[in-house]
Length: 548
Image (tube, rainbow, N blue to C red):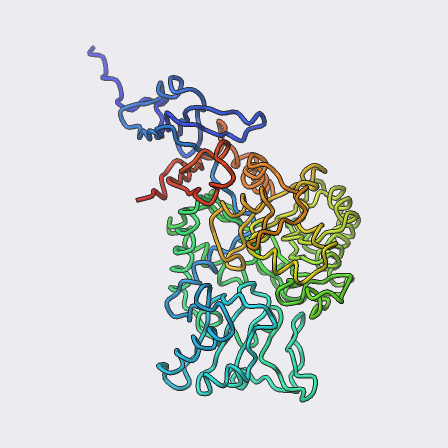
């Protein structure tokens, strides 16, 4: 009886191998290897070139690193893939830098658009302009350049919008209109007329629901926005993203559609925004959690305050510019009740909280929820946590709360924050080293479009240097090393979504999510971090981005 021919593809053959490189594993020992082998989307070998080359078969794809550095895929703990993709929709008036670097330039942009737009057509800006609140035009300034077209412009931070009189009329907003729950319609103190500035999502959306690109969208456009956003993320070196404020069920369903049609190329963890207690009850009744290898529904997001740029950071010292427009989005009892209900149902809960008082309110709600329904490893999250007090840090550590923050803000917005608070408060802005040394679980995320730049190098620069664009260094004792920053942006961010056992490091059995970089992160001078870029991005053992 003749012997069967050997299979050209042995069971031990790898699908993909990376050889001749520096593999920064981010394992517990921070091991450095030369090569990695992948099969069926997972890592099967990490070691020397010889060890990995033994797994090369006839069908194995071989990527010769030629000395380049590989790290685990970056996990973005706070991103908005759909909204980021939406920023580049051609229907928007592009008000991002450098297009609208001043009030005069912003008004010029609107005026030029109004000259060519048919009367009555919306002028809808992307998110958006980055002027200070003081420099932001009001409705009457917008009327002067666009009297015959409704205008909706959302600030880069997302915490407020400005509209003209035409848009207010279409939305039915006048001096008698009451503030929506959690939002505020700014009114002139003398006349009582709306100024056109709308604070927080519920007020912004009174007009935004009518504006193209915001409330007026098609399913096809949302799908294209997700695809565009993920392509930008993958090119930056992110293999996973946590969208912690999917604004509505339509966005969640868009992610599901893209995933079900095998078009989701990066892994997404979704948390849906809850606007009110009634909204929360309805969502909890109607929404069923889901989980696949590419897409997971994680839980719920609540906003406790706004931000320094809008003056809506909830601070104990309300005399600070950062807090001059602040107010409580929730009373403590309502917040406790909502968080307790979500926690009891088994979901993760995340809070947007920047000011020290907002952070404490979030902590109070966590304490109440855990007292009512004790549960280990609940991993409540606070997003941003810009100005925590030392006492808050102790409570955060005790409760196991994850802090998901954005060190790129130190560089991008540090000067603005400094002008909005006093020097004493600036010394406790994002105390990353202190939190790390206390054992608080940290995660990094870019928060585009509220951050003007996407690439993770900006997180590294902010965390390592803590230096603003003007050259001011805030709390230099809080600087951390690039090794620590990389660990936080991989393993730390994976922990924030309960996924540290399947991603965040290059180890056997984990998902084969990796990035090949232009530079060696561990040896490159800090001064060269601006040159760092992703050259190859791999998700599940498949190359999903390669620099041309």
